[in-house]
Image 1 (cartoon, helix red, strand yellow):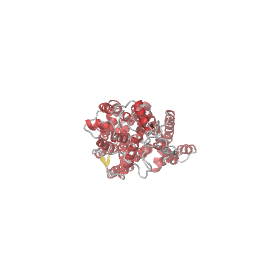
Image 2: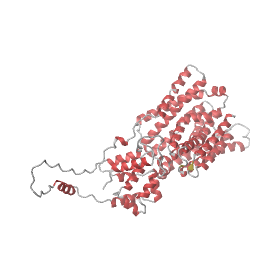
Image 3: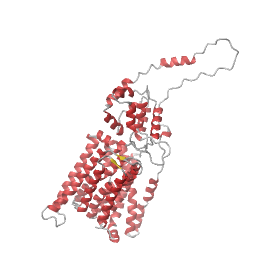
Image 4: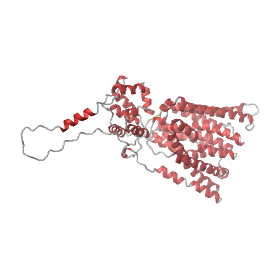
Length: 546
């Protein structure tokens, strides 16, 4: 017999509420299905040497907790909602929908237990009892219910007997989820702040047209750039959700740091080579030290020990080590090659930088092929995004997503022109160097929305997702954004080499080493976040006194 969707969903929701989980995912649904007494999976699991109780406990262990002050039951994740909708279709089955394409924690637990999904599906079908013929049970039950009882003696006329109780109908699968199971839409404080900050875009245009102080133009452009970068990332995320894992991964890889790339390209076209170089290393350092430090600190205030996937973190650290090598070799060549140490960057260093840039881009593309194509199953199990499913959300249409993406890109380009045009007068007025501006301020402006997202999910207990944002962004800047700027400089006649200053190289190398050490054990706490923030403070202080 098929499992009752309503009962399984209610059991899953109670389990998520009792454990104070952030959402009701496919893990909760599958655990509830295992624990159903009539579940055909129980004998199949027993034959594989696993009890349903053990597997259910493993599925629900370590899931992210709900935010403080949340009211009401946890919402369904979009994956769980999709499974229930498939199971509710005519001819659908809940177990079949749950075992159709497991991902994240479900796939990880199955792999750890050595459960073969194909064999499990076959065993479940074999153990499921065959349904009895439809007409015979119905006729037999109706006959029993409608059969009048024999009177033992004649009795006086009385009120007519009550009608026979109707046979309880078999629960029908709902065509769609009840409204109370869907998360209620609402406008968060972050959305309101983003729309208020968006006023900085027309403000900077108006100030520039009125010939206002460049410092005011710079401040207004910086404020307006933050929500624009957020809209750019939001539109990319919406298109990725509609495009499937492979195309979606490519979209995220292409547009994940589009705002930073546009700002750096505008600065490069204006001839601010030092600013562009500093923005590359500053973005890497900001993601590794500032974002990760704030994420560990915010998550550590909620839980004493933060657990995350150390395999995924180790892979990101290895990619960053490769990026550090790409920064070191051109600088070593410049220092050690005869006749080049005492002169500015020459043709040899530019050719070497272009060769290293091509190698880094090819390596980054190979990593995408590895994670999205050849080993996508391993990546789906290990990645933080897949391991922790997010609550269901309303998807934008493709037209709206493309419109927002195009509009945000054009707006970022326009605001970047104003931002870069005010750099020189602002640095002179405030007594700052272009290196400090590129190392600290520009990355903060371009990454503010991403910083907020990483800290928010860490505060909610989703450390794998927070690490993916911080480490993934650092890897993309080091292996893709920086090399693309080198090739772009070659195309527009503004040579950009990968010969960075010793301070930048040592800072990135130290940050990569410290992050690798901290993430090696797959655990962290709030004090390690303080340590990362302390190291970032030292880098900022050093850049300030350059």
